[in-house]
Amino acid sequence: MTQRITLVRIRKAPQETADVNQELQWLGTSLGLFNLRDRDSSCFRVFITFIQKAHHNEPASSDEIAEKLNLSRGTVVHHLSRLMDAGLVLREKEGYVLRETNLAHVVKDIQRDVQEMLVELERVAKEIDERLG
Image (cartoon, rainbow, N blue to C red; front, side, top):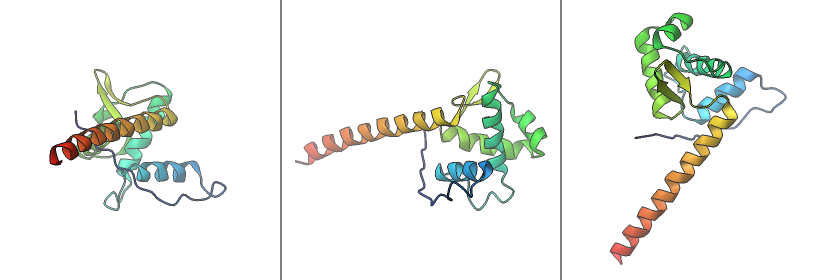
């Protein structure tokens, strides 16, 4: 399984001035999900759909998301691929679901994934160093 984890350190708006949408935008951008090419915020809107569905423990299909957000199915599938590559969305029999039922658990899972990746990188680096003498 390949998983791409991108973390971007961005200055966060002060708590008293940020609304929930700004905080969600910051979170998604910090995870490398959104960029300037997402002019109509379609990836952000797909991401929000999964957050909403997760609170009700409901899966979503690409067709359902496309219809709800007034996007083409191709656009939704493109964003679903990005969200799955990032390890945020999973494919299940009933449809697609957010990795966990809430964002705090998603971030905790990503933290564990990053830690596991770093442990593996360190192990391989040590092996390479030993071979090189």
